[in-house]
Structure formats: structure tokens, C-alpha cells
Length: 304
Image (cartoon, rainbow, N blue to C red; front, side):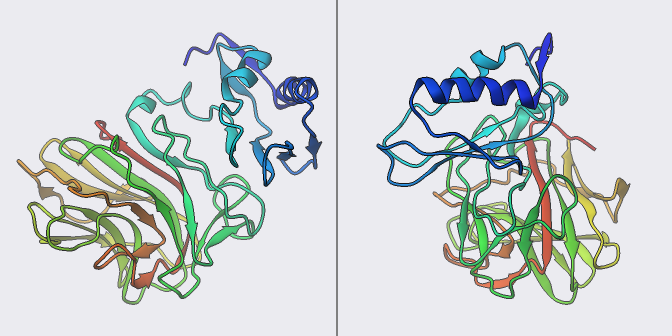
């Protein structure tokens, strides 16, 4: 997006307030970066999430509000009023999942800031936590002890297969590295699907995937993770025919040959974050045992 103009949080609040007044909405700013409003035709509140930062773009605040206001008033909607990466990230067009995981403590709402605008569903007891986070106001508490607590990104036909360059990255703060713990996966591991998953297991970063119509048949273990109870940035990258990993910006472990490999999902399978998905459509083995922040999947670009 062009960066010829910019406006602040206060400018946006003023424009949003004016629009709400015109449409007879109720506006409440509780000073905690969450703005709530109600509309009589809604059965529940409509939530806007505002971040106290400069938003850069080629729109005036009034135009921006018109762009992001809900078009469907018949159900509950959540809108993220920020353009966080588009003007700063030269590869933003290739981002297919972008979760800042910011919000209030205990929240069960998150927004995908990528251009795909994927739905995000909280399953089980998983919530946002403001105590342990890397950036922003919160992170995902994926240390519930129950593998049925996870974040689900429902199947999106626009989500691409991993046939070429890609980078899967996130910030993790592990609490226990013994055993296998699912971080993010796409696919159910069963017959008839091709899929991928990122895990930490026994102190190492792993990436498993399928190359055909069966379940997982390639298991790659990279180098060691850092200590527990500290955030570390992990990234799985494919660049051409090479597959490799980074931990906190440092290449971790071996580089693997992926010549001719396409990693994708053949069925309507969701992406799950915070739990390992071993078989079937429900994660059933090993929660992440970690806090997770700043999830980004880029397809078409190798970032590292």
C-alpha cells in the first residue's frame, strides 16, 4: 500500500466516532485499545480492535473507516483497524497467514491480518494471555495441558500448497521440551491427505510433511532450541531445492533437499495452532506446551 499519507490512532478514533454517531451506534473507548459498539439489529456486540500506533496508507481516516466498516449487519463481526505490515513488508502480498495474537487477557478473538483474511476460531479452553508475550498486548496461551485446546484456521480454498519457496515462522516460549509438541500444522496426518506440521520435540525443532497421498512420510529434525521460559523466533524456510530452519536468526541444523517436492492439503483440512494433529480432524496428541506469538506464513518468498 502506498505510504503517501499517515494518520494516528487519535485521528482514527475521531473518524470512527463520527461514523458511529451518524449511524446511531454506541461508542465506548475504554482506553485499553479495545473499542466496543452495539447495534440493535445484532444479537451480540460488534467489536472493533484498535491499536495505538500510526496507520500508514493512502486513505484519509474517514475513507479508512468506510473501507473497514462491516458490510454484513446480520451477524457478529470482528474488525481489525490496522494496516500493520503492508507498507513496511515488501513481501506482504505473499503472506497467507498473519496473526499478531493481541488482545485483552482471556480473550478468544484473534484476527488474521493477511490478505486472505482467514477466519480464526478458538477451540476448547485456549485463550490470549497478557502476562507472557513477545510483542504487542498478548500471546496465545497454548500450555493448557489439553490437546483439544487449540487455535483453528478453517479450510480456505485460497490457501496455497507449499510447492515452491515459503517461510513458516512464529515466536515460541516453551515451558517443557520433553516429548513432541505441536506448534502449527496443516493437515490431519491420515491417508489421502498431504500435509505439514511444525513441532518442537525433545529440545529440537522439527518439520514433518507428506509427499503423496498417504500420511506423513518425511520427518526432518533441525538443530536445538534455546532454553525454556524465553521467547525465541523459529522459522522453517524453503529456498529453491533447500529446506532449512533458523532459531533466533541463526541457521539451525542441516539443510535438506526438497527437489520436486510439493507439500499441500488435498482435502478441506484446517490449520491448527497450539496442538499436534495426529489423525482425523481433531488434534489429539500433545499441546504446544508453550506461549505462541506473531505467527506468519509466507508462500512464494523465502524470507531467510
